[in-house]
Amino acid sequence: MKHTISVLVENKPGVLARIAGLFSARGYNIASLAVSETQDPTVSYTTIVVEAEDEKILEQIKKQLNKLIDVITVTDFTKKEHVDRELILVKINYSFKDKAKLESVLNKHKAKLIQHKEDTAIIEMTGEQGEIKDLLEELRQFEIKELVRTGRVAMG
Image (cartoon, rainbow, N blue to C red):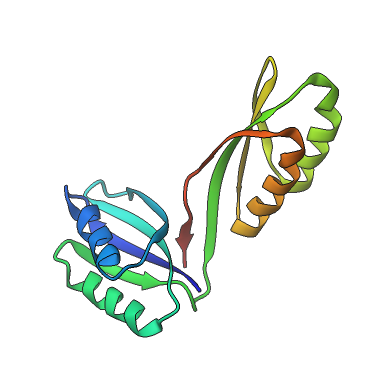
């Protein structure tokens, strides 16, 4: 089961390394990680997505996170109402003859064509993980050349 955890931390060097160390020490891979300053530049908001079947170990990780000096709050969104989004940029093969087909796909998924040069196009989309997966599946017909994802961000 994937767990989405937010950690509000003091914006100081080494904080992210200590957080990541807690997960790696317990053998959990971080599936997604997004970090940025909040409206207060001394505080950062971190969203971590981790795959974990054992709830007891996940509870232990949350307790250990709360013990870190630079951690302000820890929130597990897994069983709470929340909104989560991810941003992707996708570079695809593209020619003018594909314009109508591509526009149809983009309109269906609320994605945008943000750049077109010669034989490639760059697509941007923000959405839930399932929506992004659906768009990527349809873009395969154009041959995906490159994909960049931000990682999930979440808010309660």
